[in-house]
Structure formats: C-alpha cells, structure tokens
Amino acid sequence: MAFSVGFTRFVISSHPETAKEILNSSAFADRPVKQSAYELLFHRAIGFAPYGEYWRNLRKISAVHMFSPKTISNSGFIREKLGLKLVNQVSSSTNRDGFVEVKKLLHFASLNNVMMSVFGKLYDGFGSNGGCDGGCDGCEVEDLVKEGYELLGIFNWSDHFPVIRWFDFQGVRRRCRDLVCRVNVFVTEIIDEHRERRRSVKGGDGVDYDGDFVDVLLDLESENKFSESDMIAVLWEMIFRGTDTVTILLEWILARMVLHPDIQARAQSEIDSVVGPGRPVSDADIPNLPYLHAIVKETLRVHPPGPLLSWARLAIHDTQVGPHIVPAGTTAMVNMWAITHDERIWADPEIFNPDRFMGQEVSIMGSDLRLAPFGAGRRVCPGKTMGLATVQLWLAQLLQNFKWVGPASGSDSIDLSECLKMSMEMKKPLVCKALARA
Ligand code: HEM
Picture 1 (tube, protein in one colour):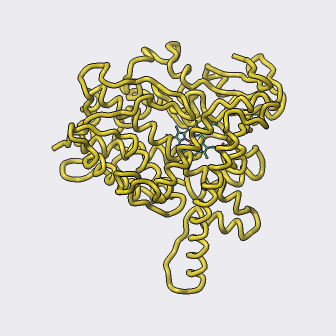
Picture 2: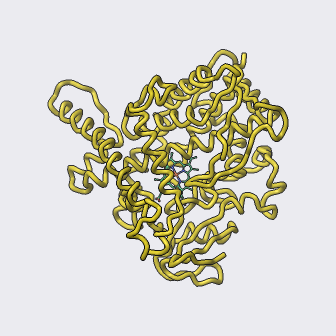
Picture 3: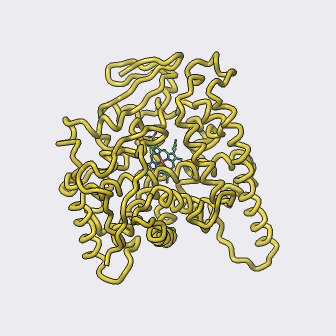
C-alpha cells in the first residue's frame, strides 16, 4: 500500500516477502527522525542514528557489552531476584477483594532490570507500593519513560507539514524540551556517580569494581570518540526501550492466561514437572520449558507489541520493492499485525493456540517474516534476547507461584481492546486475581 500525508510518502507492506525485502535491504537501513525523536536526542542514540559509522559503532559496543550471550547469561541471577521481588509485590499489592493491577508492578520490575543492566543500579520501590508518594528517583525515571513514550507516540502534524513546525500547535516541542532537561539532570547524575567511582578506584582505595555499560561509554569518551550528550542519549534510549516493551508483552500474556485456564494449567504442570517441588524456577530451567516458549510466541503473534513495527524505515536512495520503484526519502513500514492475522499464513489466526508452535520451529528473531516481532535485518532489535529472557523467566515465576483468575468466568471476563501508542498496549489495564498456588 502506498499513500502520502503532507510531504511524507509512505509504503506499507503486509506480506512476509515484501516485508523481508524492506527490512533486510541496506536501502532501508535509515529511520525517519520525527520531530519528537530529534528533540528527545534520539538521533544520537542507536534507534534513530543515521545508518553509518556512528550507528555501527554503537551497535557493536552494545552487542559486546550489553547484549552478548555471556552478559545476558551472567545477569540471570538479577532477573531471578527481580522476578521473586515481583512475585512478592503481586502478593502484597492484592487489594481487599483479592484483585491486583499488574502493569505497575511489571513496569517497576522491567525498569529495575534495565537500570541494573545499564547503570548497575537498583531502586527499592516506585510509587506507593515502594513506600513513596512520588519524588523519589524511581518515580522520576518512571515519569520520564512515560512522558517519552507518549511524546514519541503522538501523531505530530509538524512531521508531515514542515511549514507549521514553528507554531508547535500540539505542544510537542515544548514538552520534549522540558523532558530533555529532566533527562539530562537524571542521567548526568548517574554518569557523575560513575566518574567519581572510577576516580576512587584509580586512586587506589581498594574498591573492587568491574564496571558496567556506563563505564564502557566513559572509556570511549576519554578516547574522544563520544561526547557526554551522546552518552546521555544512548543511556536514556536503553532505559526507554527496554522498559515498556517487556511490560506490555507480559501484561498481554497474563491476560491470555486468565482467559485460557486450560493453557495456563498446562504451562504450570510443565513448570512443576521440570522444576520439581520446593525449588523456585531459575534461568537455567527456561530452555526446558517448550510450552512456555510457545505461549510467548503465540502472544507475540496475536498481540505484536509493534504492530506497525513502530520504528519505521527510511529509503536512503531510490530503490525497488517487488515490481515497484520506491523513491529516496519514502517512509516504509511493515504491518506485522496484518501478517500475523492473515489466514493465508496462519490457520485460524484469531484463535489463541500455542500448540501451533509445538510441532514446528518458527524463529521469531527476524529470519522468518511470518512472525518478526523484533524486526529484521541491520536494524533488528538488539535487545531481543535480553527482552525474551526476561519475559520467559518472569512468566515462569508468575505461573509457578500463582493461579491467575479473572473477575468473572468466560471469554468476556477480560477486555482485550487494543490501544496503539508507540507499542500496542491493552486499552484497559489488566486487573485480575493472583491466587497463591500450594
Ligand atoms: C519484548 C521486548 C521487545 C520488543 C517486542 C522489541 C521490538 C523492537 C522492534 C520491532 C524494533 C525495530 C526493529 C526494526 O526496525 O527492524 C526494535 C528496535 C530496537 N530495540 Fe527493541 N524490543 C524489545 C526489547 C528491547 C530491549 C530490552 C532493548 C534494550 C534494552 C531494546 C532496544 C532496542 C533498540 C536500541 C532498537 C533500535 C535498533 C536500531 O535501530 O539499530 N529493545 N525493538
């Protein structure tokens, strides 16, 4: 499909073959930088940096220091710890009628997970559940992510009609600038803490310190390859991207568990038989839980968090997709939602059926465009393994500890209405019962 909005030309692919052509082509290795992304500094971070040396360097550094299999496996104990904390919070947040709203708790856990991977820092709690009424560091970072998501998700007319940009009718520029000031204060403080720690280690006070992702970036800064504002952009993007994606996916999965008690029970019996009694499920158990993997895949199929692969691509030069010429400067999108709901590709696409993945191996990492929730090609999501490892472990922990039950029985007990922002979220937050399993 091709159309224009103002000065922006769009092509949208709803077929795996053309989706593959677009996502894997070097001609589409750039992203259109919306006004909000630019204002929020994202053109200096991985996701919106132009295809070239700077972007390649960032991808390489993050692949080695943040997303390598070794780093992800070494951080298994942190995921386990945060997952157990999440389980405790679910128990303690249940209201008098036995209901819990899980999204806030998932958000808290995901944010802490990313904060630990990036900054080596954990927060005790957010909001009233963490004993704070706002104003603590945890609440501030939560607020920053929320506002950033909202701003990037806004359909901004100025992106397509440059003449009206200066009027800032929707207030996007003003809000972005306010937000950037707060992000600068927040991230700079953490960078300064790292500088201080490095100085004290070099000063030989005997502190044992291995360093984290911030230290890697600080090393680059000292080699003059990177400025402090580049560093702020990269770190802020990691927090921003890593938090909501995981939260949103887990909320959809739990909603499905409530709606399909038979599927939930089968996953629990798989966990029980692999883990045995009296031991908490661990990162090492995850490869032995194929049905749990199938549930995650099926949720990604039915509710792809980036249904329009939210991070669009931009044609760097004139190119061809199938028989069509696509001029330079065209924005290309993949309608992953249409592909994953196409009955020519998936049998009974509206039915939630994890079994469809039990007999056949369907890779979701970007090689099979029938289901590519993390995108594909050069700009495929670099955090996909870390995101999946987190979702799978926390799902296993939540299922091992609780039976998830809706407010009423039957298929209308949970509202599955969707709301498309940066990602596709549940329109109404999931509220359900989490009954402790014996
Ligand atoms: C369930 C979890 C996640 C989903 C569904 C997801 C999805 C996506 C998608 C669809 C893209 C665009 C890919 C493309 O254009 O082909 C993307 C890009 C990206 N994601 Fe993720 N993501 C997830 C988790 C994460 C995590 C945990 C991080 C980091 C902490 C992360 C960091 C990024 C970055 C930096 C990019 C930009 C890559 C580039 O342009 O080179 N993501 N993600």
